[in-house]
Structure formats: structure tokens, C-alpha cells
Image 1 (cartoon, rainbow over the protein chains, first blue to last red):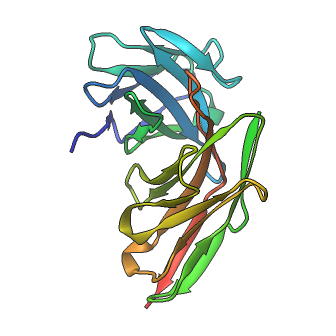
Image 2 (cartoon, one colour; image 1 turned 30 degrees about the vertical axis):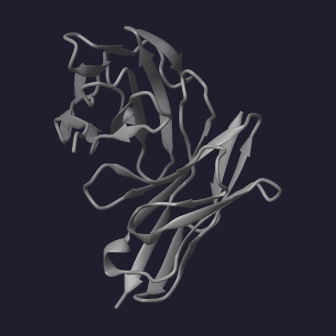
Length: 112
Length: 115
């Protein structure tokens, strides 16, 4: 069964460094999403992406964040200058023609 | 605007007894509602969804949920818990048929199954 994959599973970085989180969505899906979950808090929507552009973003998704689909298979989330409060589990999701989003296993980001 | 409240952060049941996870939602639009489950170190897996068809929705692993518009509820049930049901469960709402279709999550309910 096709699934969404994410790499790395765990990323440790120093405050102020750039990180790129990678996702491979299900191959025939056209809609892509990033969510995050800070420890002890709810899963929060960050951004949705369709047809090579952002279709919606949350207040969290400020200028420090960007997304890209560089090669038709990967979907990346970049944080330019990480802050301590960016420490969280980041989930990628994709969907096809239905409204069901399929999630990856997540990347745990730890900012020191 | 939309929001989800899961009324119990933790539920403990004995194996073989019923499970009830409670969820209330608020939405300015006609909602789609979902239950996802997350086992330790795994991704979020869809259990079931409601998208304006039958109000009683059956999902995987014997779970079902009933959409009650008058009560703005979407409670998840299973008649007989199994040890493998120990996980965290999320009730989720989105705007039906919306292009962006962002999901709004509840706080999660962690289920413990005792032998």
C-alpha cells in the first residue's frame, strides 16, 4: 500500500541554523500539507500546497518557513533560522481526489 | 472557523470491554469529520471519516462513529477493546469540499488497554 515517507526521523540542530525536512508524498497525489505538534500541544496546520504554490498558510508559517516541490516527488519544508520554539514533531500529508489526507510518520525536530 | 474538543485526554479500559472516545466540534461550514489513530513511533492513520453521507460511519478495526448534528458530536466507539487498540486518537474536522481542506485537530485521547 502506498504511503507517505519522511526523512530524517529525528533532526537535532543549533538555534539559528537552517533545516530542511523532507517528505515523499503518495505518487499520484496533488495536494500537500505540513503540520506540526509541539510536545503536549495539539497538532497544528502550517501550510497547504497545490499546483506548485501555497494555497493556504497559518499564522505560524511566517517568513522563516518555506516549502518547495523541487523535483516532482519530494516536498520539503525549510526553516531558515531555527528558534527554540520550533522544536516539535513535523508531519507531512498528501491527498488525491478525496478529502482524506494521508500522513507520514513525522520528523522530530530538536533545536538546542 | 472550526474547532474540536476531545472531552477526555486519557481513557483506560479493560480488554474486551467497550471503548467510548468523545468528540465535540464547532464549524461555521458543513464539516467533514475524521478520526485518526497514532501508535507509538508511527504516523497518523485514518480510522474513519464522515462526509455528509450516512451518519453512522464504520471504520477499520471494528471502530465506528456517529455524527450527531444537533449535538455537534462525533463520538468514536468500539464494542470490545483489544490490546492493540492502545494508542492516541485524534478527532479532526475540516471544511467539506474546500479546496485547501486544512485539518483542525482535537487535543487527542490516549487509550490504555488493561489485560
